[in-house]
Amino acid sequence: MQTSTKRRKTRRKTQRHGTLFALLLFLALLCVAAGAVQSVQRAKEKETQAPSFSPSEPTDIVLPSFPLAAVPDRKDPLLLLVNRDNPLPADYAPELTRLSDWDLSVATVLYDDLCAMLSAGRAEGLRFQICSAYRTRDEQQALFDEDVARYMQQGMTEAEAIAATDRYTMRPGCSEHESGLAVDIVSLDNQLLDASQEQTAETQWLHEHCWEYGFILRYPSDKGELTGIAYEAWHYRYVGREAARYFHETGMTLEEFFAQPQS
Ligand SMILES: [Zn+2]
Image 1 (cartoon, rainbow, N blue to C red):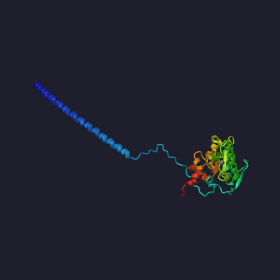
Image 2: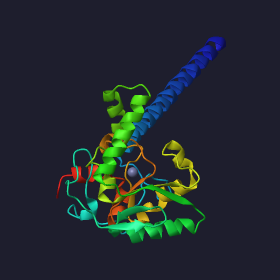
Image 3: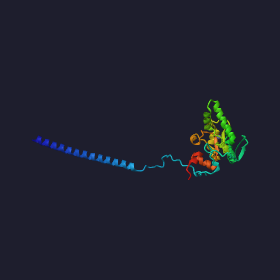
Image 4: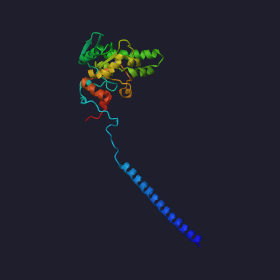
């Protein structure tokens, strides 16, 4: 009898423990479920929040130097556009000044700035050679014919030779050199008109500073399709100091500038 009473007591105890354990388990599951709901809500909130900005984070924004150069006047005669589609009038006759050191001439309007640019470079130990400046239409014609003849001597047909010449040499009437506003400047120690010019200290200095004196590199390496002329590391075009600053800041060519819609 005593034994059976003991057994009943033990069974009741076990039942109570089982109920307690089930209750605790239920509560624990409830807590886990509540936590999961909260974290989903937090994740949703994060998604809808605007991305935070910390001032110490590096950004890609590069502020330009101020004040920016004014947009040049399209009618400025220094911005004269000369290319295959825009030949010079046959009677175009710029006022010229002689460059005594090289037996060449340039448009008088750029003479002072050209001298200032070359003097500044010389003061840094650089030695320049101007290999081309103003050309008459006849001289441009002779230059073109000469290049065609040279290519034909190398075995090209006349059509191939003309196409090859067109890549670098403008046809008569279409060369900026006929305006007197262009100069080809190279290093005295390397007068080759090819890619090696880019390696000379003189050309590197001119590429960096020419805009300060009113010149732009007229045929950049990445703009051949726009200018119609392959890269010429030595050909500088005078546009005046203010306009040169604008072209330097925007990276535009004259062709791109005139293709912009007028405001
Ligand atoms: Zn040139």
